[in-house]
Every structure is written in C-alpha cells, then in structure tokens.
Amino acid sequence: MNPGEHALMARVEQDHWWYRGLRDVVARCLGQPELSPGSSPRVLDAGCGTGANLAFLTELLAPSYLGGFDSSDEAVALARAKAARADLYRSDVCEPEIHGGELDLVISLDVIYIPGAERAMPGLRALVRALRSGGLFVLHLPAYAWLYGEHDLAVHTRERYTVPRVGRLLEALGLMPERLTYRLCLPFPAVVLARLPGILRARRGAGVARSDLRSQPGTAVSATLYRVLTWENAVIARGGRWPFGSSVFAIGRKP
Image 1 (tube, rainbow, N blue to C red):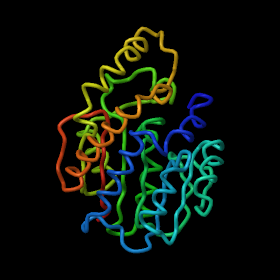
Image 2 (cartoon, rainbow, N blue to C red):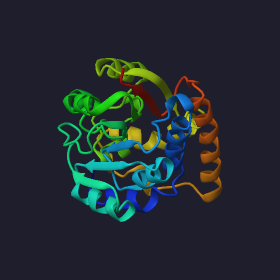
Image 3 (cartoon, rainbow, N blue to C red):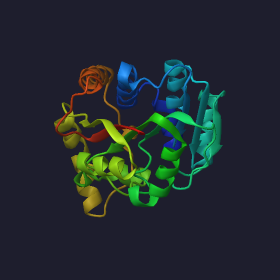
Image 4 (cartoon, one colour):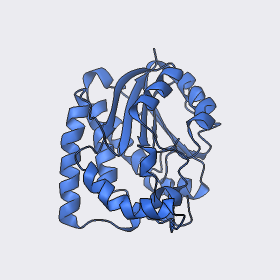
C-alpha cells in the first residue's frame, strides 16, 4: 500500500460502515449452525492488516488459538495495539509461515487481490493444507476489473474478481463452496457513481492514488449504508445470493 494507508486504515476500520458491514457478514455466516467453526476454534487471519478483524474474531469466537500475519511490518505493529494476545508475525500470503497447528478457520479478507490469485496460489494451497477436514476458508475480494480506480492505485490492487472466477478458485483449492455471492448489491449504483471520477482518472493515467478511506460520507449516510448491508448480510447468511455488487464473498469447506 502507499505510505499512510495503513495508518489511515487503523484509524477508521473500527467505525467505518464498510468495515463494519464486512465484519457483520462474517459474524452472521459463522453464527449459522452449519458454518460454526466449533467451540474454542483455532483461527488464522491470513493478511490481518491493522488488527480490527483480530479483535472482532476474539470477541466472536473465543478462539483457543488466534494467529495473524501480514506482509507489512507497519500493519503488524498496528495490529498488536488492537489484538495484543494474538500470535502476530510478518509473513506473505504467497509463501505463508503458518503457526497454530491444525486450524479450524482461515480468513483472508481483501488480501489476495494485491499479489493476484495466480501468484498467491501456492500460499493458498498451504493454508488449505493447514485446515482440518471440515475446516472453513473465508475469502473477501473486490469485484469487477472495470471498477479499477484511484483506490486500487493507492492500495496496489493487481486484479479484481467475479463470482465465477472465485468459484473456480475454490474448486482449484479443493474447497466445497458453502457461500459464494456478490456483496454491496443494493448500494452498488451509489458506489459506482462515487467511484466514477476516480475510475476515469485512473484510466487516463491521471489518478492521484488516493484511497476511498480519505473521503467518508456523513454520519446519517454511513448509518443508512450499514443498515442496508446488515439486511444484505442476513440474506447471505441464510444461503441467499446477490446478482452483482462491488465485492465478492465466499466460504469454502475442506472435505
């Protein structure tokens, strides 16, 4: 990521509507009986960023082991301030060092789009090998190559995805899809309109590499967006699918 992006993420990820909505869909899905990772699970966050998800997983699952790694020393240091009891270390999703023995749950939220799925595949296979039989792998990725804009420049996005492509990725990893859908479907027109100027500037080569986190909507709009996402997320948790959206969400199960 560009300098300053990790520090910005660390400041806003607790309260920002987008991050809250992502944590909500994970919580709702893992709260389903058929998707529960069990009591006191062993959990690894592959690409933990600046730590809010680790704190969330601690509260949600009371894991017997919680690990997290990131390729950025800055991100790991910021994560330690939010999840001091987690096993945090520097590693790369493309060639991950895996702690914690046999795992019940691996999550990787908006990580592999940076190196790209092909480059990350050996590391993803290693993470799947670390899962127990029946263990779960949760993925979240940005959708649609045509949405590539200034935010992607700022966070060094290599590629964006579609549901069919993520489905093929799960298949290549030997995972059975339990959930596979787009997210942010209802807010999608507003998301596209908000990002359109940055998309056009990036296509002209005039992008200034500013992430979306640098301009946030007001409190009332943020609250409305979050409420919409919680409704969408409830549909996903029950096994529903959305036909389009700005993100792809997937849960795969190891046979």
